[in-house]
View 1: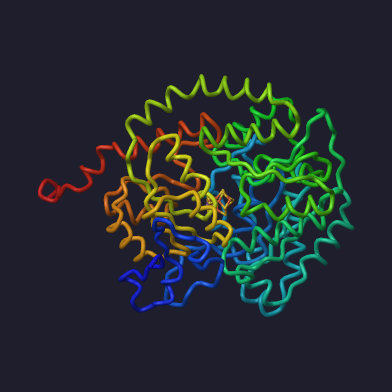
View 2: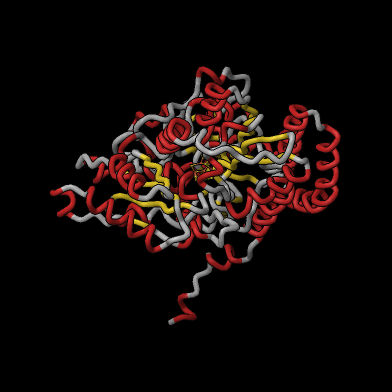
Length: 464
Ligand code: CFM
């Protein structure tokens, strides 16, 4: 029976449909875990809210844009600064947290005036910044404020500014995935097509679904540059607001994270006829095949082969060193969803590491299809996992290292199991050839750190 009711879920038996163990020769299409559905009451979800998906994941990455959060300050603070996406604009996007700081009296009497005042104040305080995202949150959506009308009024008063409103309160969907969707669709309908990019190459792409985590975008940008490919828009790593308004002119959309940004790629295809090409940017073999696909599209195979040869010559020896030492280690990946299918085969092919458990916070059915197709037999696949399930699965599969976020990471550290930040990375970037060497190094350091043995020692006697 491939669906698994864990012992800890005896009180919430519906969880059985969210936990799957792959068996030999199975037709996996019959056994996909339920996903992208509301968390079962009683299960302590690790998910983020829909607002968080829009702000923290996509909008907040922009390097020249004020992110005005229309709500209590906590919504702003809790979606600020945790992802580590740098920019070449002096990290403007990481320095500030903006909020209208809504209080009870605004909830009772309305907060539109407060929003307008806050928008003007923010622009006045940062006179070189002319672009802004405004987000609704649960409280301001519930009281019925109309932020689009406020943004329109400000833009009429100040023609040099442009504002994009994201109406995606936390309760708009079952997870952060809804926020990705709302932002993608709003942007394509309201902003794409408003700016004409300057075309400087005969090959142009949008690189979609890469958020410059610790410099990922920079690694890929070096490759595009060497290939003579102009990236009109990065959605949204190290990007400007206006760059994203010119996405309609690219010849090709190259998609890395299909979950968070496949929507805009599909719309660009529908509305402007730009083809979509999905690639994996993590791992040697995947990165090489992704570059080859792009090379085939533009007919620049020679340049691509030269680039791959150069990169492999430079990085493969280091990768081999780590492979020798990590071969056979057992890894768990507990992140949002896509990194499960991006990484499971990549670490197996490049490092000989076995992925024995994977948990997705918000992946959809298509993500699980890809994960399970690429994953091993006997591996545990979980949708919207809870803390007790994590503990039970650790007992079952005994991983040597867990790639997850700081919340679950803190838990597993207490069990003295090495954890690597699978969201914001430990010492990235992780994309591209050099990036996967960084991932291997972080995994090696985590697995071999003497701290795990020391952490288990009882030093009480010495302290007292
Ligand atoms: Fe895409 Fe991402 Fe991910 Fe993601 Fe996220 Fe993320 Fe993630 Mo954390 S956009 S879906 S919403 S690859 S923040 S940079 S690591 S859960 S698997």
